[in-house]
Image (cartoon, rainbow, N blue to C red; front, side, top):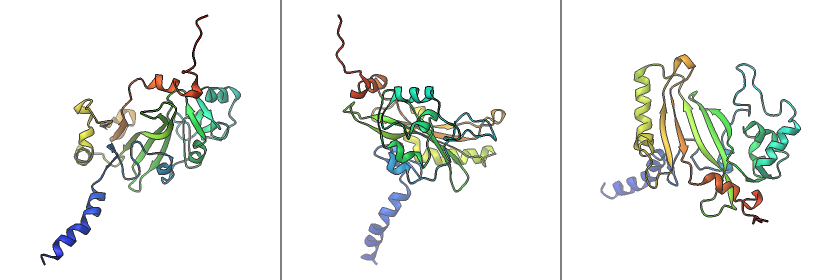
Length: 236
């Protein structure tokens, strides 16, 4: 018996650790994704068809449902560098889905921070919104990669205060160290908070995870070699 117990515990540890882990590389996760994840992880999620976030109810403005105007393409090219043409409709709509993900790999740089939004619904029926951006490398402004910058989820079935309190308890246990109520903490690069239900505005109870902004982020985008912010300027 004494010999079997340590073996049982050893075999159980990886499974227990995985089940209780909602953090990767110091950043918070949901079951499907983590803050900071890139295109490879995004490709594993079953995304809704990309649409304009401000579409009218019952009349979604899907990406590709209408031609992209010349002015829209010009606006996209002012921000993004690389093979922009195929991904341009998604970049203009600031939205993404499964079809967009391989196209985004050809975008090599952004000269400003712009987020694209994607949505999916969990098997439990919880709508989830994810935003991604080309994020500048901490150590080298010439390197950018697509990364998840925010995740928000609502719980339409959470109608009563008791249900919402139970959800909050579960979320606090998972993400408490990232809590907005703790303020900015050294070494903590993300924030978690609750989204209160507002029935008058049609809002549902939920939560969000957010990658904290980095210092001088706007300047770092401009300093990418393809964005012109490193060119020497003559005073004459």
